[in-house]
Picture 1 (tube, rainbow, N blue to C red):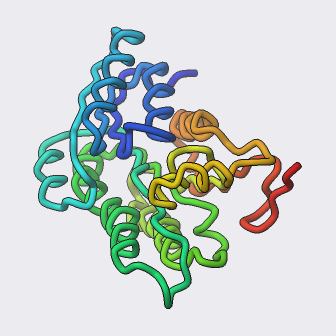
Picture 2: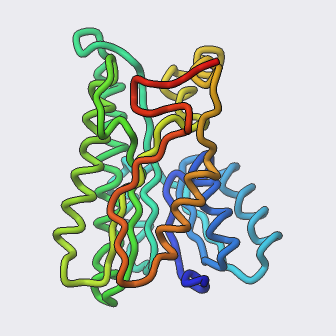
Length: 252
C-alpha cells in the first residue's frame, strides 16, 4: 500500500548521496518534493531528472545552507510539508581534541545540530497545526559508539539521536512521528568531505568490503514513512553486513 501518494516532503542535503537517493525514491511514490542544498547545479540537474521521469509530481529547489539561520527561516516561511528529511550533515577532519581544527568543529556542530534545529523549527508548527507529519533525522552509528579521533562528530551525532528522542516526547499526543535512522558505513561524499577533498584517502575507507549504498538508506526511509498511522518507528541502526559496530568491519 502506498500511503505517501500526494504528500509533500522537504529534503535537506538533497544534491547528493542519501538525500538525492531519497528524492528519487519518494518521487517514485508520488511525493511532491522540495529539495534544499547548497549546490544549485546539482539541484537543477536532479529536478530536471525527476520531473522528466515523474511528470505527475511537483519539484521545487531551494538553494540554502542549513547553517544560515536567517535564510532558512526566510525561505521556509509559510511553507507546509507532510514530511521532513533532515539529511544535511557532514564530518570534517579526523583528529584528537588537542590537535583538532576549531573551524572543523564549528562546521560539524553548526550543520549537524544547529542546522537540523533551524529547519525543524521552521516547519514543525505547520505540522502541529494540521496534526500530521513525519520527521526523519539522519544520524549515524557514530551516535551510538564513540571511536578514536571522532570526538566532535561523535558528539554531534549523539546529539541528533538525543534530539530525535526528545522530539518524540515533545510531540506526544499528536499524530507527528519522528525517526532517527543511523547508518554505518555508506559510500557517499562523506569521507571525501571529511578528508577535505583527498579522494585517495576517502576511497581507501571503502576498500575490502561492500558498504551500504545511498539507495539502501533511501529504501529504509521510504519504508518508515509508509508505515501505518499507528506505527512509530523511532530509531533504526543500519550497517552493511560486513560491519557489526564502529570497530568491527570484515575486510577481504
